[in-house]
Length: 106
Length: 156
Image (tube, rainbow over all chains, first blue to last red):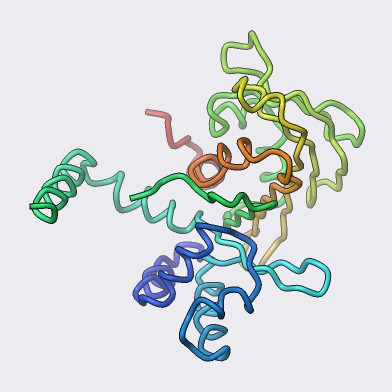
């Protein structure tokens, strides 16, 4: 993941993987079984997506006894934020977000 | 959009970052006040890195302690384990101590993988929420920036 934001962007460019990150954001340190239970997907499919997230550094796997727990590592997203959001005027970006919100709501 | 983390508090948080620096340089950045002041919200760290000795974070103005903890384990420049209480916020200060592990693993190409595990948070849910997300992220991305560019994120 060092200097390789390509992997992070690619990992994020998939709805299932974003869904997995959202689940881990809500509650961290989950097993494959828990994550699998919330997705209509084969165990193999979930594992494949988790592997992509792991390779991009967005998910860190730690052993706890016999279990493998999956943790969200938000740091690569922060680095993209620093690189791609801070750089361009945040004010302009947030004005557009506000505009989108207003349009979405109306 | 929600920005706060974990309604069901997790008992551990894990943060990882690759840094282009030597293990010694990263160890220094963790344990030397002149570094911590530039990435740890202005706080100056005080530690000898010896197990059983104090591990403190002084507030930027030096008048109070943000952290008054103990080194649990130390294996320079690879592993440092300290207790953690968030004394900078009275709502958090009286929660039981949690634990922070800094782990530095050298990789190929002059790069190290720095992992921060903040655990034993079972009985410290407010602390868990406070340090999650931007809390540790800002510290780690700031640490990386300082080591790789020589200047802090908030320097200008």
